[in-house]
Image 1 (cartoon, rainbow, N blue to C red):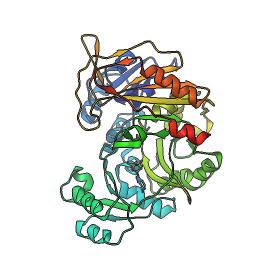
Image 2: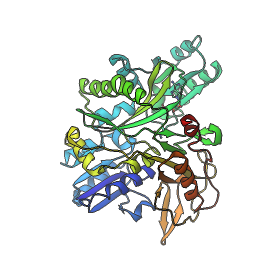
Image 3: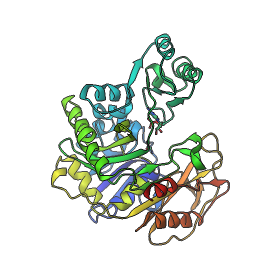
Length: 422
Ligand code: AMP
Ligand code: GLY
C-alpha cells in the first residue's frame, strides 16, 4: 500500500513512524514532510494547504490511502477533494471539520445538544460585544471564530483587557477574517485534559488521555505556544471522569454531528476542563493534537493503519484499539525566541537515543545531507516507561543529546502530573 500523509510537523512524524509498523504499508509520501521526516518517508515539495498541488500529486502517483493531519487542509476540504478522486482518507470532510474551524458552530452545537461547556455569547457587531462586556463577569475569555494558529483565544483579566481583545479581533483584524465573529465566554477553572478519539460516526473510542503544556516557559509562564511538551496518561482523567465524559460529551458529540448531517470520521480531539461541576469542553479539534500525538501514539499497541482504514470504512466497532498500561513524556526543543521571533538554519546534532526514546522532528530541513533547524518548535523527544517519573527522566536524558544553537525547552514537563499522581 502507498500512503500519503498531508502535513509536516512532529505530529505527522509520529503518525508516519506508527504507520510504518504495518508491513502492508510499503511507501509513505509526506506532503510536505520535513528534513527529519525524510528519514521515514518520501517528502514531496507540496504544501499542506496547496489542495490543487495535492490533487496533482495523487493524479500522478498511485496513492491507496491518505491521512490528512493538520486543521487547515481539513477545514479547506482536502478530504472532500481526495474522495472525489476515489482516494480513501483518514480525516473529516469539510462539513465535519467545521467543529474546529468555527468556534461559533462548536458552541452552538454544544448548546443545542446539551453538551457541557462554558456559558457564552457570540457577536458579529463590535459595539454589541463592547456593550455586553460592561457587566460581563471578569476574568472573561474572548475567542476569534475561525482558525488562528491556536492564538485566537485571549483570557482577559480586566474589563479593559477584554475591550482591547475585542477591538484587536474585530477592528484591527489581528487574526484576519477569523475575528469577524467572536465568542465571549465564561472563564472556567480546573485541570485541563486532552482526549483524542477515533470515531467513524457509529462508534467512538477514546485514546489514552494526555496533558499539554501550552506556555513557553517553566511554571506556566510566558506566552501561549503550540505546545511545549506532553505527558500521557493524564492523572486528572480518572475512570469516573472518563465515564462521565463518554456519557455527557463524547457520545453526545458524535450523535450531534450525525443529527446535523455532518458525520465525523477521523480523530476528534476533546480539549476538556475538569471543573467543580464536572468535565466541560473548552475546544474541539478535528485532528490529532500536536504534541499530544507524540505521547499518545507511542502508547498505542494496536495497529494504527488498521484502525485508520476501519474508521474510513465505518468498521471501528470490530477493530482492536488498545493502549499500553505505561507512561509517555514528550519534551519539545524549540529555537530561542519562539513563539515570537527566532532564527533558523542552525545545524543540529541528535545523539543516539535509548531504545525507549524516540525523536519526532517538527521544524528541520535537509541541506547537503545536513539537518538544519527551520521552525520554532524544532523537535520533540518522547520516552515511554513503566512510570511517569522514569518517562520524564528518560525524555530529558534524550533532550540532553540534542544540540543546536539557541535551543531551549521547558524543564518542568510532567511535574504537575507527577504531583497530582501523589
Ligand atoms: P483553545 O485554543 O480554545 O484551546 O484555548 C487555549 C487555552 O485557553 C486553553 O487551553 C485554556 O487553557 C484556555 N481557555 C480557553 N477557554 C477557556 C475558558 N472558557 N476558561 C478558562 N480557560 C480557557
Ligand atoms: N496541542 C494542542 C493542539 O494541537 O491544538
